Length: 560
View 1 (tube, helix red, strand yellow):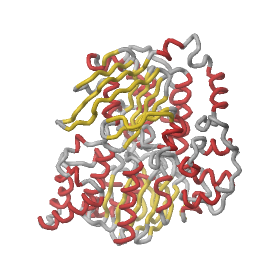
View 2 (cartoon, one colour):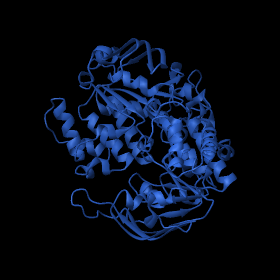
View 3 (cartoon, one colour):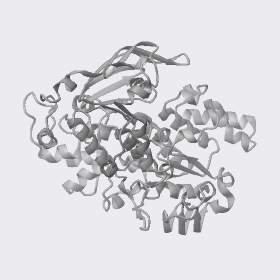
View 4 (cartoon, one colour):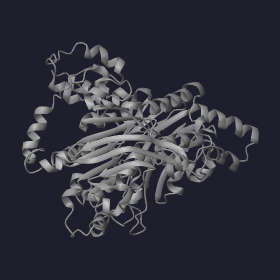
């Protein structure tokens, strides 16, 4: 169905116009018709590039130099280009906001069919089918500009399904979806694969969501290294980028490795874990390690040096109401976040999480109620003034990136905030970008761009850090580095508020969870209590044991 034969591809070097080092180097592989294939690997390893070759985006849109052959259902994407492959290959991009043409959902779904001259009756039937398959019929007449990132992702998938392609290629399709929506989308893909024989090829960093559905895994180690290809268990046993459940199985010697909670239950029942201490069911087992880290970091939060900063609320919200074009999104939010807290905001797509975060930096002004951040009323304070003390990384990092190099992005922040020039090597090293300081940011992978945006915001050492889906595009190693970095910020007394669908990230670093439901706070409590009480917003390890003491692999290893 899909064949790569000795394919070598290099993106153009923006500085010289010549070809850069190969991203794909002498790549050969075969994907059988009707397969469900998962492409995994570190950020920047070439996963998105491999996918772009399947419909001709590489090299037709991105330029560069290509050698070798690609065949998809007997067709040559290099010769036919994306338009010539559009009825064979449906492609869903990593950033759904870059894929849309029209601003109304129904218009977006009909656009490609109109271009290809489909009869009106056919278009109507296919639009209805796509809306139902992705559970977005209620969005039919909504404007894309008013949708959440997750809703836009589902619209993007629906728009390519209307052409009924033979191959569906998806670049991180669940990166902006809440756990339930991700399960629904993946369930739809599995049904399309099983019922219609549609070949599915997708890349994903959150393997815990999708690995159990894959027939085959293609692990991309990085440029110049041959991919590892095989059944999921076989490949995951040989690599370090694995979901928590598989990591636990590897560390405890479980064989065969479990890919699902159901498969892991028989192993978990035989584990000899310490009984809980009376009255302390939700106490984190890693508390001793955290205390030791605080001693190394200097004065503890709440000491004489930081007491005033910690006890004063960082965020105070009373009766916050807000609507987009008459559509009420926030319905009287009351919330207080104390200085030094690490709070995760979760909930289904479209419940107002990003809208809430934007009010904390002043990008949106309340229709009702008030928002005070670090003592400032955001309704009457400019974004520029708030940015002196508040660092905000949006869901789409491209919104912050416009300089010609990574180093210049950080230098611009310093100049804009009146800070002296300084050597940012340590910060770049912390976020894993030390070797990329001279790279053009928009040429980087999604995960790398996310880290550039984070570094550009953190260069001013803000007291309050606001993050919207910070692990979008990050692999497990980069996510672990981000967790370490954010925990270090908290030990320094910084306040972190993070909007995320990544339950594994929340399990690793948050201490408090706020669940939004239809614009209101549905749940607000300690992370271990909230996760254990939820079937949806719980980590893999917590789902396995249903015990508030066990959210992460380290929790289990320490509890043995």
